[in-house]
Image (cartoon, rainbow, N blue to C red):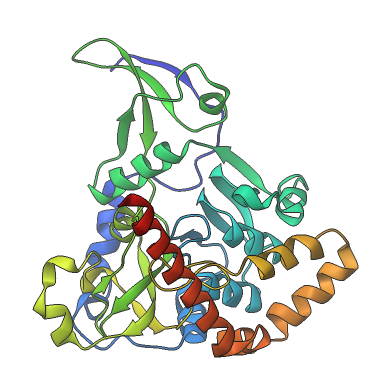
Length: 337
């Protein structure tokens, strides 16, 4: 293959599918079996997220994102993680506040979409502590797809001739069939991923609603996978319509029932994001001492996610966010009629 330009970015993971295959082959058989994998979130993070690991977080922006798990990672003071900053907003903000990662593959980060920029994420990225390699959103999806297919790379028709390509770890090559240039992006195998879903059974069969982004590919590419779920359901319920299962049990290492586990983000068709609290985060970041006190109260001062929810109105507040989500979807339906 005729190789051309190469990006200057660092590869933080090994794209070799044979090494990944060896890991999956040697992985304990009980992790792939239909056994009860239900544990509490604190234990799951302690057992499966290790200092130095490469971490990936599922969801899209602040939607269906396992933010309870992000809090727990910070609470347990995990350090020197790699991080997949794919469609990251509040999850990156939380992990930046805890300074848990020191290298990042990033396509979208720092910004919280229309809400504004995270000062703590920006300051941490500019601190010199973090090594950064840039990609596009699709390039990162293609990297996960290559890993999920057991391939060392995936060709894409994007980034060529851009500054993003120059800062990436991609390689330009001539297509062997047409001679036209393509970018080759290397497979990405995270050490551990956390994905939040609407429902899962005790074995890890999981299903969710709304946009998937790259969570299906992420589940297949990751060496260890923690599922956090709004609710546990009986396996018989999963068996009634197995075609609805997007993530099968044999990919999953741990299942954690975490109601409102995406809070203060939203969960499609379940509850809306708490925009007031997300604004509190952005406002607190303006002053370093205020922000330290804020983190002490919001994360380190809470023993678990239930404590955090109670700090913000508990079930009464969650019910209001559920009502807001249902109202918005009703309005969307009305507008489309």
